[in-house]
Image 1 (cartoon, one colour):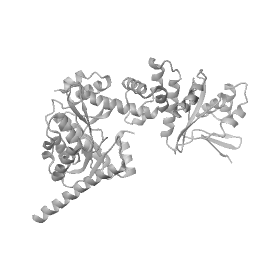
Image 2 (cartoon, rainbow over the protein chains, first blue to last red):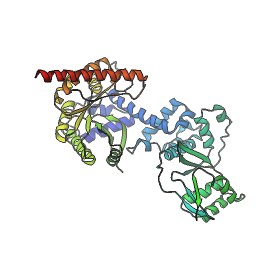
Image 3 (cartoon, rainbow over the protein chains, first blue to last red):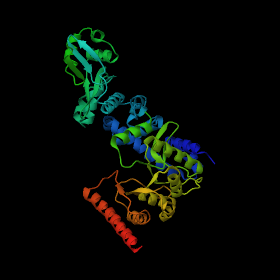
Length: 248
Length: 214
């Protein structure tokens, strides 16, 4: 008689591969009955992915999304007990998934949605991510802030897809463009803000642990033609992810 | 933080009256399969599950309830009945039993057994909660009927009848009616709760009457 662990391994392999014959023979049950568990598992995980990636689902439609999710689940099943941590590899998976090759921006939209999901789950009470002095003003960054760099205009596509705004979607120019996006937690979920190259470089340097001088230098290098102080004053200081106070 | 530590932190934060989980497994070799998967009812599985219940109860410093799952297949290797398995878990670990009457009915119909046969092994066992729910009826490709525990419809009349049977054996045990999908109007939920309450009240009156007669 097989050991309990042998049954579990065979059962798990059958659920993930869809090839239920071996496990069914071992258990002494019909493959169709194993498939009930496979369907439950795939449906639960595909629903979880749809909750994390609503814009991707809106862009490809629910049926195509469910199929794509099933392919992803089989390629990368959950390796953590927390369902909320599942699906971080979906953007990379989409980048290499031939059936969505006609939508090259889809992977970037997924990358943005994962960052939004992480921010929405972030703790409220973590330590600030940076703490610098800008000539008498203390600047800190909220603990949920993350930055991503997309190669397509993921942010307007994401907004239009979530708003089910077909007109706005059709007007978006999907030419590749490097765009830094800031994502952080707010009271009712998460916010996303598109940044210019200088502001993006400034924040990237701060998140990497750099001081004010290094961050301003990074902003200047990212946009040699522009005025880094003006860009920071315009895009960073008033942003919702920044906290300013007097350093005295 | 591992699962048990997170569960402990949650229990300390919300101080629930009861903590329960299903007689099932979900993870193997670090992969999480997102379903309540069935066990062969063997001596080995009994020892493994009893050991795990011990670990949980020690970590939480309280007893938990273990619930019978809905079953779609039987292991040829099973040598212990499901209710005997649960009774032995309660005896070995001191855990309580959560009796899901819909699952008893669904499993019995799916496996071709009589749902009433489930109860005798647990007469006198510490059954601390009962669950009721609706289930779906589907056809497999080979034409066999299969019942799926989907918590998406009203409680089946046959399950209400089995609930009356359960109350006769376990007494008026606190009862929860589960809905996860296709949630109906509040009036439907109220009606179901009222039906369960009247059956619980009826059982209390019957037991009071027996006590006076004795």
